[in-house]
Image (cartoon, rainbow, N blue to C red; front, side, top):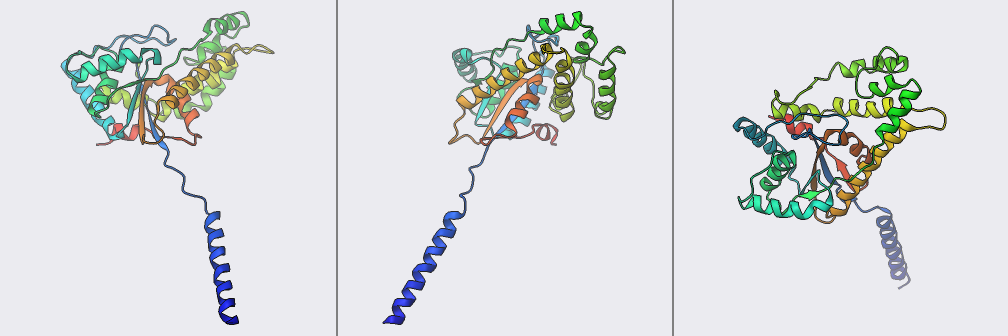
Length: 294
C-alpha cells in the first residue's frame, strides 16, 4: 500500500512538472498582416507636391493594356483590402463610384486611384476600396527663406537635385553615395516609358534610398543654432505618414485580414516602411519581386 502511495505521489509530481514546463513555453505569435506599399507617380499633375509631374493619358489602348498587365502582377498580393491616396472624408464618394464601376456604370477617370486602385480591387473581388491619405502642413517657404538668408540655398536645392559646388558638405555626401546612385535609372518623364518598367523603378530600394537621402541628408541640414527649419519640414512629412499609417490601422480587420495593399505616391513609401518595419502587427513585403516576376 505504501509503495502504491509513493508511486502515485511520484506520478503526480511528474505531471506537475510537465504542466509547469508547458506553461513556460510561449504560445506562437499570430501571423503578421502583410503590407504591400505600391509606390506610384501621379497620372494627373499634383497641385501640392514640390516635385511636379506632367499628365500622362491612361485612356489609350496601349496604356490600358499596360494597366491590365500591372494589376495582374499586383493580384499576387491576394490582398484583403486596397487603400488609395484619398482622405477618409472621401470614403462615401469612393464607395459609391467603386460600386458603380463594379456594375459597369462608371467610367474610370485618369487618376492612378481609379486606373490602378479601383481596377485592382475589382480583380480581387473586394467590396470596396479604402481611403487612407492624411492632410499635412509643409512649411517649405520657411525653410527656403532661412536658406536664402543664411547662405544655405545650395543645401536646399541639393535635397532635390545634385548639390552645387558651393555646398561642400553636400558634395562629400554625394561622393559617398555615388556607388548607390550609379545603379539608378533616371526617369525624368513617364510618358515615354512602359508602365510596368516605371513601377519597377519607383518600387526599387535605390529610389527609396534616394528619397530618404533628400530628407535626412538634405533638408535636415537647413538651419542653425536653435533654428531647425529643414528638420521641421522633414518632421512634418514624417508626421503626415504616421497619420496615413493610423488610417490603415483604423480600417484593418486584425482578425481576418492577411494582406493589404496601399497605392500611394512614391515619396511616401520609404517613410511608411520605416514606420512599419518594427511593427508587431504588420509586416512590410516588398512589391518589386511581384512586379519583376515572369
